[in-house]
Length: 170
Image 1 (tube, rainbow, N blue to C red):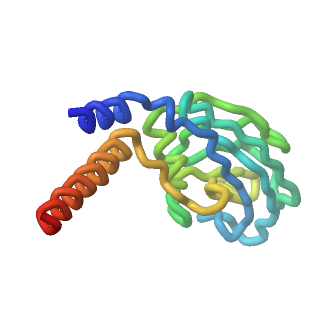
Image 2: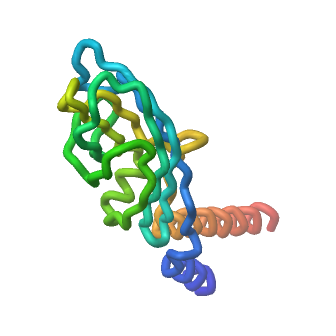
Image 3: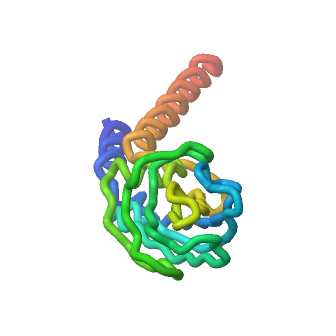
C-alpha cells in the first residue's frame, strides 16, 4: 500500500517537473520551402518555453534579405514541410517577445514542430525560415503520469526480485 501511495503522489505533482526549456533558431534560405530565385538572408536567436506556465519567449534577428519584410510568423511544421500560422510576429529585426501558448502548442514546440518564417516582397511565402530546435538535442520531457508509471514499474520489479531472492535462499 505505501508503494501505491507514493505513485499516486508522483502522479498528482505536475509542477515538480516544470522546467524552462531552451531553444535555438537559425534562419536561412535553405530551410524556406517557398523562397524565390535570388532569395538571401540569414538570422539566428534563442527561445524558451516555461513548461509550468506555457510562456514561450523569443529573441532573434536577421539581415540580408533580398526583399522587404511584409510579415512574419511562427508556423507549425516539421523541417522542410510548410504549415499553418501559429503566432504572428511584429515587423522588423530584432524580433523580441513572448506569448502564452496552449498545451497543444507547447507540445508541438517541444516536439520541434514550430518554425519562424520571414515573408518578403521577393518571396511572399517566406524568404528565410528557421526551425525552433531544443538546445542540446531534442530530448522529450516525460509527462508526470509517465514518470509515475515508470516508478510503479521499477518498484514492482524490485519487489519481484526481492521475493524471488527470498524463495531461492530459503
